[in-house]
Image (tube, rainbow, N blue to C red):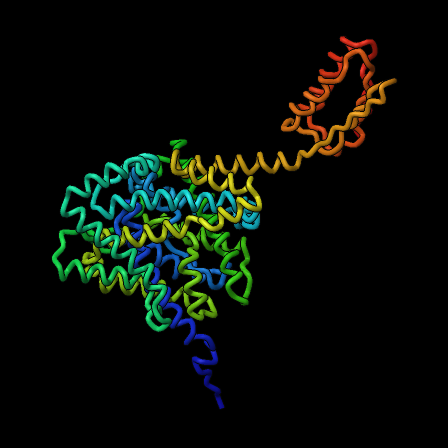
Length: 492
């Protein structure tokens, strides 16, 4: 007698995963469209990335409950890349990013991204948040935003004056402000009402308000899913000879990988299921980005908003994130015209809210009380991204982090013992590096030149080349000026 296996026994968590997938779909839908519009690409490409994040990355091993898709954290970088190199080059950049992530995962470099200073990552997200907010305030008013992040911020007072004098801009701002207000207030509603994600509710209400009142507000332009998908041609690949394009690829790879793996660490703290395999997750992200690149779509990262919604909705396996990709595909195939009803200022409001959440106001204050150096790195990284650009801002943050670590690691102590008669004895202990060299030389050069000096280096754990050379030069100068040569005890 043949036994029949029921679906419930083969998929014991199907009910929980199905319910969670619908929640994640509703959270992801407005964000996919909003991120695409803010990035300066067709809205459908945001859906394509969300679909790939569910159906491709979602099927691969790595992190079972983490959800991937287009992220607000890459909006600024994508906009800059499209503005500089053109939309066809975006597919090349994203494809190359995916291939690099696959390579790094295969080489087991995923775990090393966890060594990146948390302050740099938080500063990066804060800087992105500031630029997103500044740029989307223009979009909320129906105005064209300046190209650079600094110009966006500095141009806000003038934009406010222009908006006040325009009825259309004021109507558009009202829709954007109303969207933000609904999202903020939504969190205070009863749990049953909050089953509908706040972003989706805000966009739907804004759309209904615009239709009912006949407001002169711009809406999303829709060309259709198939027409929006444009694989990069041979000409686009010719841009790989441009060093600037290669730098953009490196920036995409670094930022997308770091954001995904930091998100994975955060998601692991939200559940008790299997832990993330970081190298496999990096390869999963790489596979997804490679597919997105072939389709000419937006880059993907793991997104903490969708991932936390997935966990909180009761997801138990990766089936929830795969199903969310299927719902996005069905929506894009069956209801693409619905996108044309969405007001652009409503999407701007969603992204202003998302950008605000990227800025860790309380975290900076707490960090300043405990570790001022780390707080300074966070703030400088954020300001640099706003003042210069994403890639250089992150490099500045990483450089500061390295310098801070080197400074703390190069703790050195100089003790001078002078008994009034006989030689002066100076003892160096710790790690002597070029960062501490000025202080060491100031102390040694202040010693009397008419007395013999014994410099004991046996307490040093490390003496770098710059310090060794400088100490030898000082000893020669002191010996030439004094009556006896300086005696130096060798490093142990």
